[in-house]
Length: 224
Image (cartoon, rainbow, N blue to C red):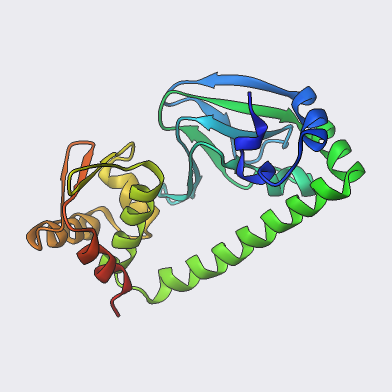
């Protein structure tokens, strides 16, 4: 495993990475596997090495909301590991993949004993807070088309491959999960997708997303 590929550790040198590598181990997962569940004690810190996972919350009403999608290089459950409180949401694999796992006690021991690593963790938490603040604001004021466009652009940047003028993305989300990710209903999300199709900006065929006009999609993402 190469921890330098994890976003949290990219600025660390070999000397700082060595003790972290010593406490890390790989864990393979397949689609549908639950990495951890809401309410459980945060025994582990997770880093996605390859594949995709979702963090989601289920409500008493029966509805659920996707709080985040994570892929190669991302850390999951950092906040719970730091404060020691139960996982506030659940994490499920959306594809086959591998995670690098560290026991909470081991990770805390190294973080608290190394100022360089501690600073990187604080910077990461600050980034998450800023992202959450921006996301909450955009969810309340942006149109569904704008939120959908931004979300699809994010997926294109993270997982897309360009062939000619078309960006291809393998979607691991259902339409329902896509709707949950942008904070709207299934029906409204389908209508928004239909609008982007009518504009000949993109097409979704099963689990395949094809973006024909990124410039137009970016314009939709920035529109009022």
